[in-house]
Structures are given as C-alpha cells and as structure tokens.
Length: 299
Length: 260
Image (cartoon, rainbow over the protein chains, first blue to last red):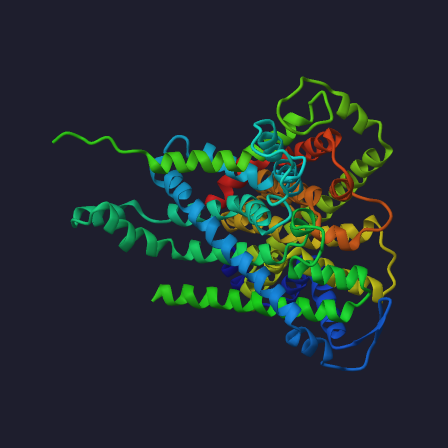
C-alpha cells in the first residue's frame, strides 16, 4: 500500500485526516446503503417475522413465539423434505466434483495453447442462461420430449414414459449441468496455483504418477474441492425454480419450494421465514466447516 | 522399451463434459428453427416462423423491454456504486477494511431464494408496491458483489503512485480520475458491467418474489413453460441466450482478471 502509507505520512495535520475519513465514508456510503438496505434490514425483518404468528392470508401478529421453529423442527414432513433437499445438494456437489476434477486437471496440466479457449468455453456455459438450460432439459426429458420421442419411434415403448421427467433424477441431471461450470473454474484456478516445480521435484524424488497425484496434487487442490462442493451444495438446496419446472406436479419436492409455497400461496410468512432460517443455519454450518477444513489444511 | 498406447481418458472425459454442457443449449437453438411444432427428432426443416410469432407477441416484446430497462438501470447504478466502494477499500487503509470487503461480497454467498424472500418481507411491511423498481433493487444487491469483486481485484494491482505523479504534475482530482485512473482500470470495469448485465438479464430467483404487474423476459418464459411448450419458447429462449452472451464480449478480460 504505497499510496496509503504516503497518505498516512502526509496526514499529520487534523484537517487532512478528517478530509481523508470523509472521502472514505462518501466512497463507501452508497454500497453500504444498498447492501444494508436491500440485504441486512430485510434479513432482520425476516428474522423478526420468523418469531411472529401467522394470522392467515399473509397477516402477521407480532407477539414473540417459538412455535414456528418448534413446528418446523418437529414436523416429520419438513424433516423428510430437508433430508431430501440437502441429500440432493450433497449428491450434486459430489457429482460435480467427480466430473469437474478430470476436466480441470486436463485443462491445467495437459493443455497449453488451448487452455484459454477451454476456460472461455466454461465461462460461456456458466453464463449461458440458467433458465434456458432448465428448459432444454424439459424438452429432452419430458413426456413429449426427445428421449421419449426416440424411444417411441424406435418402437421400444409405445406410450411416453414419465419416469424420466418429474423426479429426482431429472433434478439431479439439471443441477449438475447448471453447477458444473462453476466447479470446473474453481478447481482449475486452484490447480493453476500449484507451482510446476513441486510436481517436477516429486517426480525427481521417484514418485510415480499415482503417488504424485495422491500425495501432491490432491492435497494441494483440497481448498478448491471443498469450496466447489460447498457452493454447489448451497445453491442446489436453495434452488426452487428447478424443482418447480422439473420436479413434478406437487411443488413440495424440495424444501426451497415449501418456503415459497408458505410465503406466496399459503399466506404464512412466519413459517416460511422459520424454514428459511433453519436452512440458513445449515448453510452457515457448511461455510464454517469449510473454513475450519481450510485452516486445518494450512497447518 | 516400446511405449504402450494409452487411452487418453482425461481428454475423452473432458470432451464428454463439454458435450454435456453445451448439447442441451444447442438443441434449444436448433429447434427454434423447426418447421413443425414438434420438439423431437427428426428435424423437419428451417423456418423463422417462431421468431416472427415471438416478435409479434406483445407479452414477449414488453417483457424484453422490461428486462432491458431493469438491466441497464442495474448496471448503471452498480458501476458507479461498485467502483466507488472498490476505490475506498483499495486506495485507503482503515480499520475493518478486510471485514468490509467480505461484507460487500456477502450477497453472492446467499441463495437467491433467501434474498428474494427477505426483500419481499420488507416490501410488504413497508407497503411498497411491487414493480420493476423493486425488481431492480433486488438485482442491484445481487450483482453488486460480482462487480465489486472484478473492480477491487483490478484495483489491487493498480499503482496508486501514478495518481500521485499526476497530482504532482498539476492535475486536479477529477482530471486524475478521468485521464489516469479510468483509462487504466476502464476495460476491467466494462467487463464487470457486462457480467453485471448478463446476471441481471438472466435472474429468476429474486425476481420471482419482487415482481409486480410487468414481467421480465425470464419470468415470461418460466410461466409459459409451466403451461405449454412449442418452438416459440425455443425462439424466445434463444433471444434470452443471445442477451446473456453480450457478456461474451467482455468474457476474455474477465477470465484474465480473475486469473491474476
């Protein structure tokens, strides 16, 4: 921070220091207003509502109660939904790692000239519309979709089969498709931070390719693996659009959909808020564990 | 010793993954040109009929304009607010600077579902009528961290001594910003703005909660798909895709910046 230290040295007199402080405040104020006003205050408001009662039709009574949390945490329906949602999130996270790892490895260690092009394509697919990809899977897996069309024209089935769409398999495929580019990018960036000399010296010391991988490359990419898993897990279990489109007729296929349902259809914001804070606690536990694992790795 | 032929597993997996990533999108684009209303193979021949249908539908047209408006306002505000904040955390050192950087990146760590809910709860308490403005508020807090990340990583590498030299040579703060700082960090800011636009253009999760009477393009697609589908949905999806790929122009620099 050359500029900062110079400024500090020059800022000996009080008015200059005050002007500097004012500048910092003015520069930061708009961003703080946005994040504070559109995230912090709404979150606090939601927290308050999660301890209030629903009076029906979206009306809220502000007397402190824990009943939303107790009913959410004891209801077996919510528990099974939570298990399913978080389970699907975890499975998707693992699948993304399994598919992304070889790709990232190939892009970082085998490609030289094509590397930027490959990364460019990955970023492209990351930004190629989320909704269009969901719709694409809808037209591939659907009752009148391509797989059914192909099966019928080949005479394998004569009725469209509905087991491909509207179940957890279709959700899984779509989620992996959506979150895979992110895992690839995250793993590639950790792999590119591995100095080549380390791998070369492992070879020089007589480690074969397998040993170099398990003892050198894999531990050094742990951060990327954990980060990509956490991110995929959280975004998958918080997604309600994918289950609503590909998950079946009942909206209650994922925890996230129950939340939107409570809020927008049932007119019961307190319950919706309570479920979402339970979910948020799970996410923070995941983030915390990620932080711990990274620190552990650093020792 | 003869070298044994090894199956290039890594290459094969990589190619398959790229096919998996791009095939669904390409199929949507392909069938937007299909002559019949069918969305399955065989492909019946090329037509622009579905695009004409989309472009003559008032619902689609007004939603495209709504998305453009929300996107442009979001980007304009994000660029100004995000650049100012990035300048503050990179040029000055002050207590809590690192915590503040984390705080400004926080919205990117939360699922859209949560942000949408929280916003809706506060809008309904404050009795704010839902409109494209409430949507814009949601988009603003959603895209700000991404832009801020791009701008602050670029400014981390910026040599602020250049600004002092300009001052020493007699340039005022405004001239310094316009003639020295902005030309250097400008390309990264433009890349960040393009990223911001494509994020806003494609946003559904927060929008779903904060939308009023006027729909954005993704929401129209979403509600159409829930009712019935034909190639006109493919055509409008292709338009949505094209809009997201405006980002393509800035993507190279975005990749390069994040790799630094």
